[in-house]
Image 1: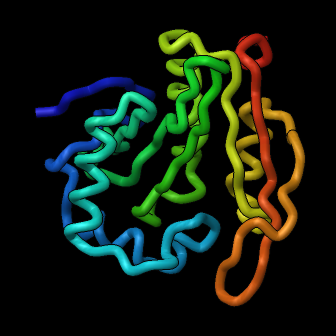
Image 2: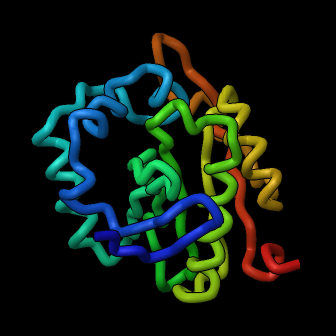
Length: 180
């Protein structure tokens, strides 16, 4: 039985919990292509770390982590989150991980981001949403621009992966901009 929190045309977004725990989910954070452009993949992932993460996000009031479920196949394909929620300054970071590579490049990230950003602005009454992504993450840079986000700047050499430093491109969108 699904515990649907948000829904899009092709996705069900439900609170991440132990029913989403699987060997496949654990392996996503050890798969080079999945973690290539983010801060994961530095330390090996395992069952215990994944369960601890799931438990920690279930208890946090500063983040909302949702499992992305493909409506057609009913498969858990990734997670999307509103995190680092700052209720004083009315902003938060949003992030996504699509672990199932079959669903890459098909608009699922945009679809999920659109509904979660709407939730952040309308339900949480936040004023600003931001993301940061590697300069090499062409797909995520395109999604940010398609969402109408503005590039706030570049953190030079802020990500160290595979013996190299990479810039982080930072984007944000204000509530009024999102609805224009």
